[in-house]
Each structure stands twice: as structure tokens, then as C-alpha cells.
Length: 417
Ligand code: ADP
Ligand code: MG
Image 1: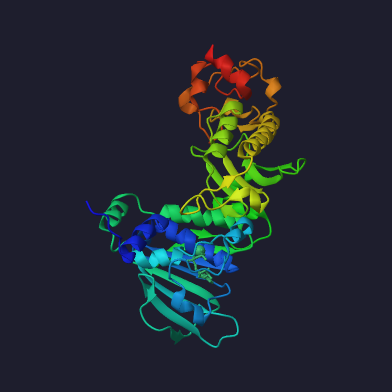
Image 2 (image 1 turned 30 degrees about the vertical axis):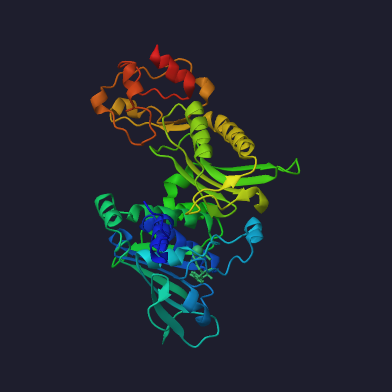
């Protein structure tokens, strides 16, 4: 067969499909643009999981009227001019492809006003170009980008997205992560027409407050602060600050919020290493909650290895992971000895017995200690998800010590005999 040159519109649409893989990737790009624009408020509205409408409004610096004609062309950006700039880049965007891509797979309308202007401008785009001249309009500070009918021209993708689960939970997840890291930005995310926002972070000065606002007080109660730094060798400088869950935290799925040089990224090897430490040290089968912000010299991070910037590659990655793993291990070892259990029995005779006790792992040696009173399983009530009674291993040892509280690997092994 003959080889021919593809038309530019085809090339662009193929490339766009890679940058904007699903509605949540469009939301991520738009929110990153808002943060790059110095916004302190970012509001997201979504209809039909993002297929019908995605709207992101910010109060950032806005876009100049004279830049609007090329705003949505491919490879137009205000964040980069020479390739070398990539080495020290601080902004999240740099490729100038996100807005362009959205215009190839959806209908984009931008309303924006820059400081000192009396009115803003509104303009719609399709396939990289303006559909009309920018129209003067009333506007509040910042930029609002609206993406409608995403993937209207990609039948297969629209179908799979309609069939698969709605993308809205993913969008909420992204916004939640951003809210935990950018604590001075007020994020909100809601479904179109809903009164209540599903994420409402409110800007704060404390990381724990931010986590509480988004993930709830019960998560924050079980978090410990962690810091690691390695500043000895000249070429191996990194710093990590974060919060990790302790031995009392219970969850079926790992939540790992990772920012490297302020970029939201995934790092499978770090996630695996962390999960491994948790499963090795804690007897409960709980998965961890992790927030980590890693900072390295910009020249140690290659930000340009993934089309959606979802991954970065690091210099000395293995060493960094090893250090973080060690630090988590140490934290967990310390906290595993001071786990708190609560138990409560309906049986009135048992009520007189102490209900709460702090267990030092070492105290637990005889599973049939002071409380050998027999209580039928049917009368036991689990009042706390962390309560060991009601778990399988409570029943294994027969009816003799249902109220027994224990912790540590020692106790669990005892049961297995
Ligand atoms: P990139 O972020 O890689 O530069 P984008 O296509 O996402 O590429 O955006 C193109 C340009 O549009 C940006 O460089 C920026 O100057 C401008 N821009 C996009 N979104 C906003 C916004 N919310 N506020 C201000 N400027 C924006
Ligand atoms: Mg961008």
C-alpha cells in the first residue's frame, strides 16, 4: 500500500484522543490551568459524567484578548519558550496541547477577563480555531472554560464511556487530591444543577484541616505526620512531607495522594513499596491512607514522559523509595504498640467490666486473661469498625474469650495454633 501524509485535522484528532482520554482528564487539565493562573478559587461543574458538560471557573489572571485567536491552537503556550525551560519548569502545563485537544473532541467556550479591563470576552472554538470573533461580555475576575459534548466525533469512545461507570467519581477524586495539596485554594465540585457540592475544600492554612474538609474527621484522627529528607550527598537531595495512616485506620483500598514538585502523579513502585510495609507490619488487613509531597531539584525530574503528565521519572528513584519505605516502617513500628481498641457487650454482667483499654503489645500473652466470661456470640454488638470482636479470629478460639482484646502479631499467631 502507498504511504501518504495524513491530513492535519486527522493528526490533531488522533493526538487529542491521547491527551484527553476521558472526561476526568479534561477536568485535570483545566484545573491545572487554573492553578497555573494563580487562582484562589476553582469551581467545577459536571453534567452526565462530563460527556455533556464540564465547566471550570477560576479567579486567576485571565487571558489577554489579543491571545484569544491562538489560545486553542496546538502547541501554543505562555509557559515555555525554549526546550531548556523544561528543566526548571514550575507550572503544571507546558505543552500547549490541552485546550487545543479539547476543541478537536468537543465544543469549547472560553469567557475571560484580565485585570484592569472593563469587560471580558467570550469566544467559542472548534478544531483549534475560533468560531467567531471574541464577543465583549460581562465577566467576573478570571476565566471560565466550558467543554460541551465531549467525544461527539469519536463514536467508539463515547460508547465505551457511556457503558462504563460514570466518570464523575474520578473527577471528584482528582479535585479532592488537588484540594489536599493546594490548601490555600478553595475548590468545589458539583454535578450540574445540584445544590450541594461533593467536594468543598475552603482554603485553610493547615494540611490536616484540608484533609478533614475533603476526606472527613475519621481519616484525620488516624493520621501521623511523616518527614524524610536526604540532603547529605550533593546529587541526592530530596525532601518528603506527608501524612500516613496509623494502625487504627481501616480501609479496603489504598488512598495514595502523591505530589512530586507540586505535580499530581502516580508512582506504582512507591505505592507498592508502601503497601508492602503496611501489610508486613500491621496484622489488620487494612490498606493505608497516604499523602506525600516530594520535592527534588527540578533538574532531577523529567516531567515529559507521559502524554497526560500522569507520571514523571526521577533521578535516584530507587534510593528515594527505599528511604521513604524505611521512614514509614519506623513510624508504623512505633505506633503498632499503642493501638486502641474499644469493645462493648450487651450482657449486663459484662457491662461492669472495663470497656476501653490501651493495649501495649507486650501485655498480651495469654488470650484467656482476666475476662474468660462466656457471652453468646449472638449478644455481642460491634460498636466500632476497628473492634476486633466480630472479626473472624475472635470466633476461632471458641466461646471462651469473646471479649478478649489483643494486638500485635503475637496474639494473632496464637489464635492460629
Ligand atoms: P499549557 O497549559 O500547556 O500552556 P493549555 O492548552 O492548557 O496549555 O493552555 C494554553 C494557554 O492558555 C496557557 O499557556 C495559558 O496561558 C492559557 N490559559 C489556559 N487556561 C487558563 C486559565 N484558566 N487562566 C489563564 N490562562 C489560561
Ligand atoms: Mg494546561
